[in-house]
Image 1 (tube, rainbow, N blue to C red):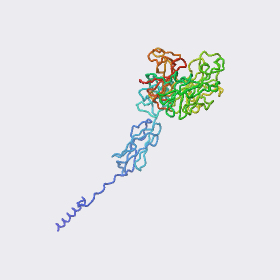
Image 2: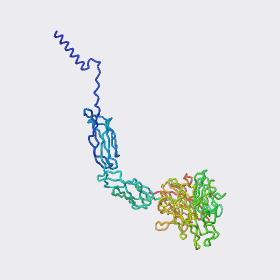
Image 3: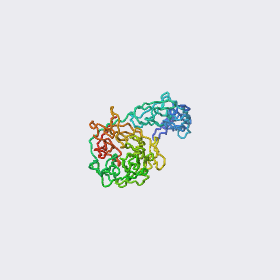
Image 4: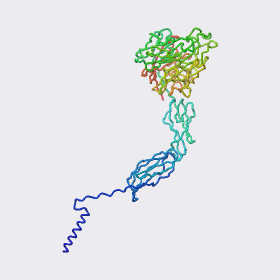
Length: 592
C-alpha cells in the first residue's frame, strides 16, 4: 500500500513539474511585460543660463523622463522648440537614453533679452527652459572681401565681421561704413563699394565704436588694341548724291525690319542714307533724302539746319536724335543771309524726328514740341563779329538702351562763345522715345533735371553737370568682352613724354563714371596734328567721328561689340567737302 501511495505521490509531483516547465507539448510562451509608460518629464540641467546674444550656451539642456514608479524610461521621444527670443536648438527631436535622459544644444537669438525653449514628450505637459541673452561686446572688427582682384568700375559687396575678446563671431551688429575717398571709392550704408577710379581704397567698418580697416588695391582694366587693314565704305568722289552729301556725323547702323542694313552718316540740309543686304553691299540711296532741313530763320522754332545724329529703331518706329543748328541770318555781326555752318553764329539744340516707313523718311510730327535739349539761354547775337565759329547749346550724341529699361544718350553742352571746347558732357535718359519732353539729365543725384526751352519758360534753363572724366562721346556701345560700356571719340593725351593725338576709348560700368582714356590708334585730328609717316598712325590726313560697329552683333541697333568689332571713321581725303567713310577691323586684348 505504501508503495502504491508513493507511486501516486511521485507521479503527481512529476506532473506538476512538467506542467510548470511547459512540458508535455501543446502549451504557448507567456508575453513579456509591457515597458513602463512615461508619466513625467522634468528639467535636469541647463536652465536659467546667461549668454551673449547669438551664441551657443555652454551647458546643454537636459530633461529626465520617468514612469509612475519613478523609474527612468528609455527610448521616449522628446521634442524641443524655441518659443521666445529667436535662436535655435540642435537637435529639435531626441530620444531618452538608458538613464531616461535627453539633451539638446541651445543657440540664443541675436537680440538681447529673454529666451525660452520647451521640451515635451508625448502628451506630457511641457517643461520650459529660460535663458537671458546679453548684448555682445565687440572687441575686434575685420573687413571681408569676396574677390581677390578688384578692377576699376567693379561693385564689391564688403562684409564686416565682429568678434568678442574670446574670438567668437558676433552676429546682428549694426555697421557704419566709410571710405577714405568718397569721390573715387564711395561705400554705401550696406557696405557696397563702388570703384570709380584705381589705386588704393581705404574702407573702414565701425561696430560698437570699434573700427576695422581694409586697404583694397583697385586695378585699371588694361586693353591692347590691334588695328587691321582699311576699307572704304563711302567714297565722296563716287558715292555722293549731291555736292553737300558728305559724312558730317558718326556712322550709325540700324537693322531694318526685313533684315537689311541702313547706315546714316549724312549732312544738312539734305541727309541721305546708305542701304544694303549686308555690310559688303551698302550703297548710297539717292532716290530721296531721309531728312530735309526745315531751314526756318528763327531760333525759337528749333527747325533750322538739321542733321541725323543717331537713330534707334523700336519695332517699326525709327527714332532719330537730330542735331539742329540755327545760324543767325539777320544780325550784322554774323553772316547775314547765310543759314549754313559757314555762318559763325551757331545756336545748337537736340530735337526728335521719327520714321515709320523703314527709315526712308523722317518727319517731326510733334513740332514745335519736338525739342529734347534746347540751348540754356535764348539766342543773343554777338556784339562783335566772331573771328571763328563756336557753337552755343546742345549737340546730340549716341543712344543706347540700358539693362534697367531706360534709353540713355550722351549730349554735349557749350555755353561759351570764346572757348572752342564743350563745357559739359552730359548724360540724359528717357523711358519713352515717343515723348521728346520725357528726357531728363543726370544731376549728380538722379535723373530729374528737365531741359526746358527758355522761349517757353521765359527764364534760362538749367545747366547739366558734366560726367566724371568723360570726353569720348562720338560712339557709345556695350562690350561683351570687357563687360563695360565703351565711349569712343577723338582726343589727345601725353604718352611717353609726348602729346599723342588720336582715337581714344573710355570704359564705364554705369554710364556715369568713366575711366581714363586708352589710346585705340594714333591719328591726325583737326587742330591736333600727327606725323603721317610715324608707325601706327591711322591716316596721312585728318580723321573725325569714330564709331565701333560689330558686324557680328545681332541687335537691331548694333549696341553691342565683342572682341573684334570694326572701327568706322571719317577721313578728310581732299579738303573740307571730300570726306570718306572708312572702316578697319580691330581686336581687343585684355592684359589683366
